[in-house]
Amino acid sequence: MMTSSEAEAVALQALGWIASSDDLMGTFLGASGASLDDVKTQASDPMFLGSVLDFLLMDDTWVTGFCDASGLDYAQPLLARQELPGGDLPNWT
Image (cartoon, rainbow, N blue to C red):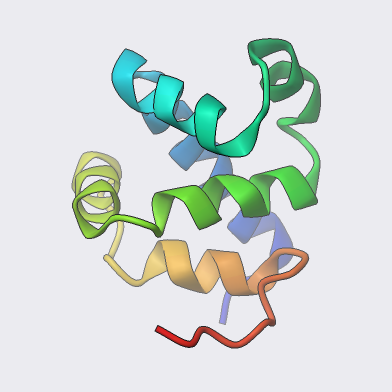
């Protein structure tokens, strides 16, 4: 089990990892409809952080790349997502 603050920390790490890649950040901005200013102002919002993890979880190579770079177990992003608002919805995939 993970606490909300731990989940937020994982999501912030994921956001940093996404932002470190211009291509991936552009894809995130396009998919989320967020601007760079939105990212800066909403980075502490648990709902926004949930959307960051939703994005990351769309692609296994992103999950493994992020986890490898961060020293996290591959299950951590999903566990973190489940602790943030909206994360209690069933995953049908």
